Length: 63
Image 1 (cartoon, rainbow, N blue to C red):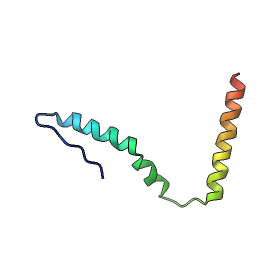
Image 2 (cartoon, rainbow, N blue to C red):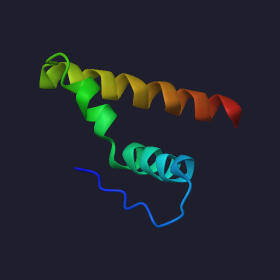
Image 3 (tube, rainbow, N blue to C red):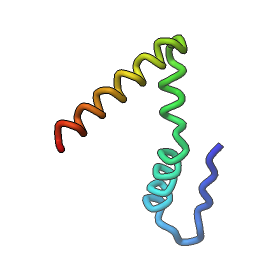
């Protein structure tokens, strides 16, 4: 659970901005999206390998 203490006289927009930044850093939204549907481990690994090959080819083509 995220707790953002709001100081006396602090603008609520500033506190909201800190909350959003902290929320993004924790990766909560990413985990929620991942848990929306189940993906088998073999499929996850296959996608990771495909991404690695793609990025490697992209880096090699730049050189």
